[in-house]
Length: 303
Image (cartoon, rainbow, N blue to C red; front, side, top):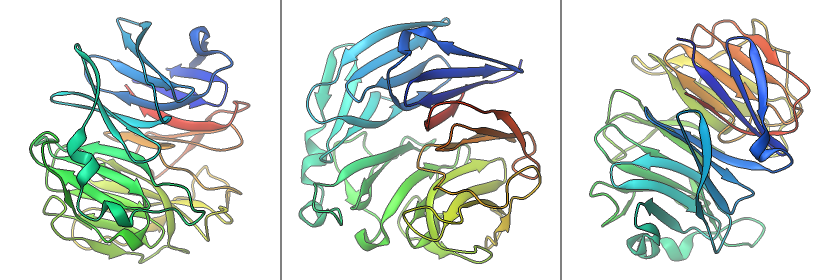
């Protein structure tokens, strides 16, 4: 069975299954700001304030998310995790929505910041196969919990300016990040990190995904996204990146942003600010333009 590709945009949700796309009318005209999928369900954050759930091909409203706007989400063993602006972490269960209070006292939290002066936000969440939770704060590094959120440990220097954290789908100790200082990998669950920029034309990275035995990352010359491109590298040994070229433009004018790159097995997709979706069926070796003319893409997911 072919996978469904979910594309969250500034004006609704599109799905692509096989070669057919359709807009989910429930969200027409609304911003889909985050997506997450597991074996049984999919979830979407709508307008930063409403959580919807897809089961048996029907969407239903799961919960209102009051307070700071929701930014990202990830399924975990003890419920769905939701990150928000102002760096809060919520857990959604059948009992309702509750803030994870232990996250409010992470060591070093007082040093979290943004260059423009606003409070830091939770930008991405990754749950490893062994249940470890990795939460990326921008700007605040990556905090890890190995006990379901009861306690937290900072794992990477704040000044590395992490934009996305992703856990390997099969190897629980492998965690990767895209940051303003390049790509980084941990092979011990976040205890230590190695930064890699070999092969990249620039080190400002926004998105990262694992496709089989390869990792893909977006890189650009800076936060405005000039000369943005997608790269891939083998996870065996010391990664060295090669530019993804076949089927892609020479450069993209804006960053391939956090949550806009996703992989499942050898299938990889990414969405762009100008409303295009690219797809690779061979872990990033070759690409095709799957959709165009969409509103600005803000997130993608594979189900």
